[in-house]
Image 1 (cartoon, rainbow, N blue to C red):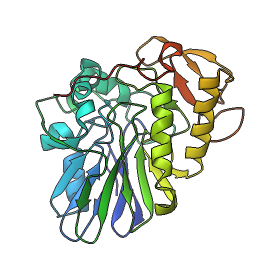
Image 2: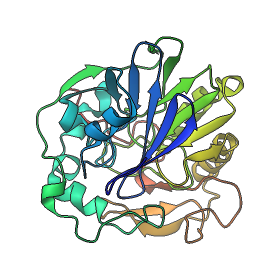
Image 3: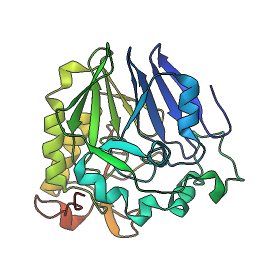
Image 4: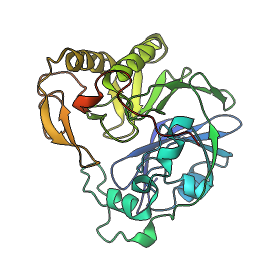
Length: 291
């Protein structure tokens, strides 16, 4: 199904992948009793109404993290579930403001071919106060016939969560580990903290076969976690390539490997990591305040 703002792709009879304006992805998982929407895109178009066309079940919005390209539908539902460590980040003007979220939606994306050059501020839902329910590592959401288990993976943000669907053997990974994993931003963890998170995620290796992420084509090989661990170890040992760049916060950062146009590392493997040199060791990256 599609309209001028969204396209949905069927993964199986109870899971839909939804593509947003900037190439970001959300997932609708339908149980017997209720549904969960994982992430809310950037807020261009009415995602809540689009989801209502896909299911009549009551829908709970859960967020992998508090960045602008994942929180948009929270301003439509007026409530969401999110880890407390990302609650303050959610309201940071860079993520909360309509202007920031419109800017993201208008960044050209080869995957979002439905993107409209005529997008305006009126197409983006206005930010508002949202009722936030805390979601923690180890929490389980029962949808009726399907359970989603939250796994904490601090790195991209301190409050990053991924969601494990043991029945379908799928891990919904958001931006936790991907071809262009961004650390070194406001609200990000240190490289050592991220490495610790990846080892925690490895404890669930036998529970899933494939990962669906927050950008790109969505489907990612599970081996990306091992590649990310290896890249973290290189950064910590100071044996990475240390390619200078700038973060989305316009601050100097480095990439662990030189990368191709799609950000895949030229050194091989699936995971590349952006980081700040001063935020490699544990205790060097500050958390945002919990609300």
